[in-house]
Image (cartoon, rainbow, N blue to C red; front, side, top):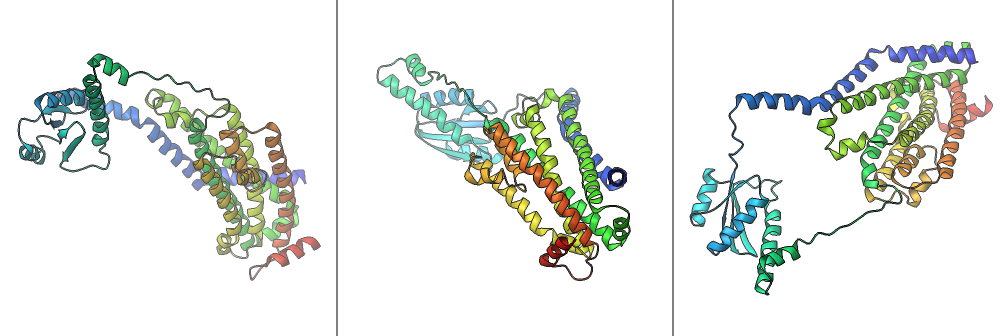
Length: 417
């Protein structure tokens, strides 16, 4: 049986790694990642070349006009706005409101603040962008000016008023557990990748088995090798091919990130994704492999019962929905910030959902080693049990042709086998 398993494993694995589609998809993703990771450095090169050929116009900033109820207030607001709106050239308007509107309409000025007082203004702009947050910034600046004036009128000097309003607050955080915000991005990325890869390669196993059955090749294979050897050989070969593809894709991403660290180091999201602790990465591999095995065994068993290749999508729908439901539970729990709900804890021990649920809890919460060990142990036992059961269904599925078999008839045939 071991010899049969080895031959099947070698044959299936060779088919995957020499498949042109498999190689093409892998190279495509590596190329896309390379393009994304090298984009800032390439952009910087062209930017430097352009700066050598194009005159410096860095001083030509868009104009922001301000008008207040008094000349003194106008100048005070202009100084405060100039210190805050550094991407504008802030000027006091030398015309009335109609003149301000005309300047904005003609493009001489981009926007204007016309103040009735320090607590009331009208903001004029030609086209209001959905990302325009000038009014929110202006609210804070004017609120600060108003408070300083109020304190000065109450007997404080301008310096004392400014010191009161800008008194620094020192806060410290002592985290005794997991920083969910720091871990959120790479946890979500890995959960999504885990979900997609498990279903993708599980579907490949089901399609492969159904193709063999539709071509009658399965009948010849089943007479020369034991079903258990065939099922485990196919699933493990697909797993090895998937791991090679994942290592190639994520490994190249890590390499490209390190080569462009100067450009991406300031991006908190990207740095977080590539800053996954080694221990957590090991847990991800464990749950990925076990989750993949239990999914692929089930997909392979269902693929053997399909009479036609066209029946695969409908046949595997129940299993797919189980993983989709588990994925949705995990995503909603992460979004809520509470990954230790009763539902998540239950899902952490259900073999079909624990790869995603338990990994999320490990990454974003404090989970005891006993809980992790119990979840992994249940998964290992389930993988072995589902693998053996799938091999029996695979053996029975060879003889099931014609109409789509019912679950009851499959169970009876397995019990008799």
